Length: 336
Image 1 (spheres, rainbow, N blue to C red):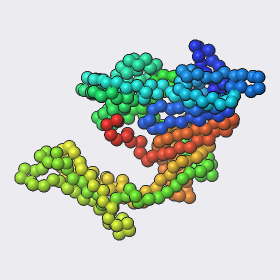
Image 2 (image 1 turned 45 degrees about the vertical axis):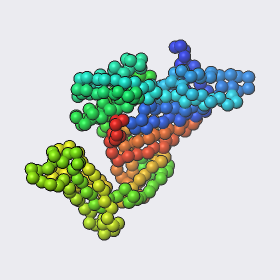
Image 3 (image 1 turned 90 degrees about the horizontal axis):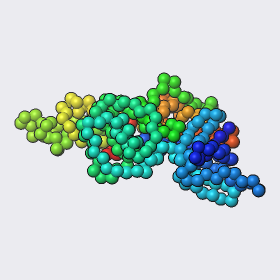
Image 4 (image 1 turned 180 degrees about the vertical axis):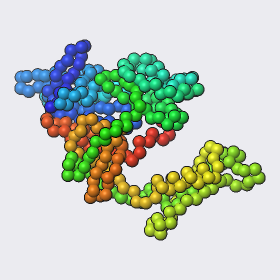
């Protein structure tokens, strides 16, 4: 069922393949494969890939990956290689840029042209940024992610950089109506499950920033705005576990109180974690897509987002291991 080819100078060579591992992570470019191939059996020799070769991986006739070989490890008639899709060139390259009155998609097109990265469909992101400056050498991926984060902040719309058939593209973040299901007794093989109050809060205290005092204080006031929200039931069971947060920007007390209520709702109660979810392989599933997880024995029946995926193909067998998150939120910090 595994079909793996190397492409060099327009010629396609089929590789004698033992196994392929395909993996990726949400907001971490690129996707990659690691393949184990046979290069010699007795007197028979087979094609050996080289760095820079394009490789094409198909499963049951459907293309799942196309990318460039970056490393090889030959051992006694066999060879293991790693290849990355086109987003690897965003990670490997750094530069300085100054953008004025540009959309995120225009920034992506500029970078793609500057570094000769083939491009496919690029969605119009709509929001024009007056200025985006990178004075220090910054990875191309972080530059684009910064533009996409600013776009989301202003429009609420989320976009995904992707690689398909050897070309880089940009699309609205996939949010399919039909969601794949992983269920105990059906296609679930195993998982790791834990519960904890390590990150739980039974009291949330929010205050305005010292830098913003002048903006947030009422005339004649001598104190910052401070609000507290409490989970009394949680306190009686777990004690006081306080989460403190300083808020910047102009905000009044009712707005701050509302924000504290939202934060308490997020942080109260026992937290469940399900990870290393092993299941029968679904080729279409990859990081960034939603799944519905149904494990009645630990009282989990809800939709998650795939944070990391690892697909293993061996002969006719396909299994996968995924980690999930409850929200498809963008990473924090300057890089995004």
